[in-house]
Length: 140
Picture (spheres, rainbow, N blue to C red):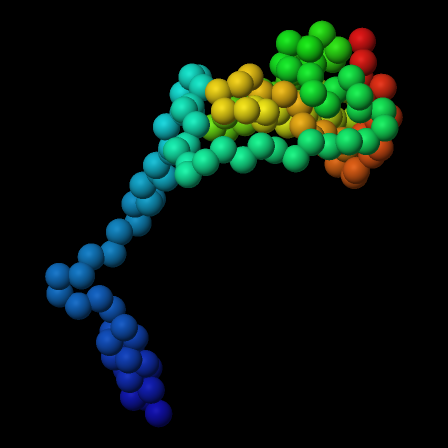
C-alpha cells in the first residue's frame, strides 16, 4: 500500500513534456488587426455587363425613390452613414423614431446613383417599421 503514492508520482511524471519541449506561460501574441478602410471611393468591379437595379414602388416614397444623394440630404440632412460598395451606395438617416437605409444604384452605366430601395426600422429594437411613416418622421 505504501507503493501507491510512488506509482502515482511516476504516472504523473509520464505526462510531463519530453526533452526539447517547452512550456511557456507568456501570453499569446495580440491578434493582427486589418488595415483601415481607405476614405476614397472604390472602383466598380469589372462585370460582364450592366444590370439596372429594380426600383421600389410604394406609396409614400415618391420623393425618396429616384432622388440622388444631394436630394436625400436636402430632405433628411447629413447621413449618419455613407457607404460605397462598387458603384452602389447606402445612406443611413436616423432619429429616435426610426432608422432609414436608402440604397442608391446607377440607372445606367457611369450614371450617378439614384435611390432605388428603402428599408426602415425602429431605433430602439431594430424591428421593421412602415417605410413611408419613417420617411415622414425624418423629413426636415
